Length: 256
Image 1 (cartoon, rainbow, N blue to C red):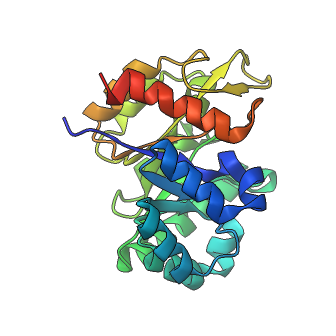
Image 2: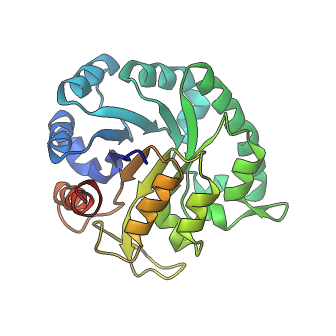
Image 3: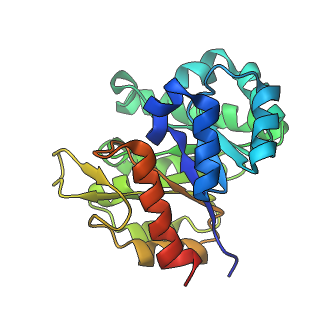
């Protein structure tokens, strides 16, 4: 099987990026990450960011693009992604008022429209889950599954956040297998505790409760392209956290 690429969702480093965007990207590359998934661009012009990524040998995996930007700034988002060489555009989250059944019916239509627009520009559109996609149903089907059943795979890929899948009480290994071939991006995270409805303590890889090695093995079998490390909140300095998670990946995957 082809080795999975290792990336980082930069939301994890949002505080240090706000202080020094370019310097933080250089540190991420030095830690051994092969690609980054953006959650904002630090005010950099697309051409400057493209040149920096080439210099430090980091790939632009894609970007998390908020619903308001998909609705109101789509052309500019496409142009930016194309300039930096990113392959994926991902809707990362929905506000609370946009999560009821009727809102989801509208999203199903709009997401397919966005997917068609992105595909025409050589970019794949994906959706990143939390837990609320497992709490609402459309015609007796949970939203997570309805999204991918009702929208053509050409227009909507899966970015599965495996931590939220497990937190929702769903078997993460079964869900990876279920979406094999449509699942290019897997958010790899770990957490401790957190019964359903309670706060999750996100931790560095290997310090929590998720079966990470079987998850990676399942991801290989499912033709995942990128394992993307994400830690929603860091008790330690964030760069230390993502460094520790990369060392876990090296020990338990890359160097095995």
